[in-house]
Length: 56
Image (cartoon, rainbow, N blue to C red; front, side, top):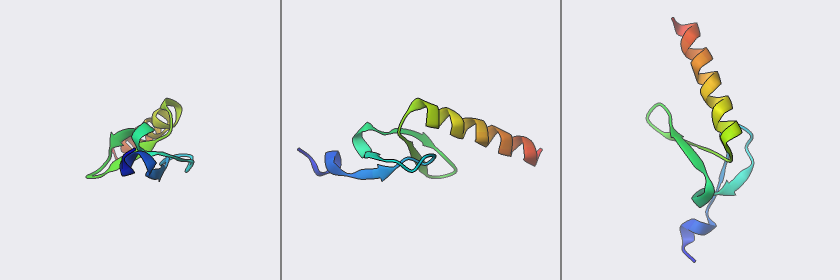
């Protein structure tokens, strides 16, 4: 088993620790956020859209 398979990371939204190899990811502003499931990813995308609307 590779070392990367054992690496744990925190979900960007709920902070649950998940295997890096199982994480969903989205590229943020010049870095990558990791998500444990589609629900957390969707929540993050909605929050990002709200922030963008505030800037306009």
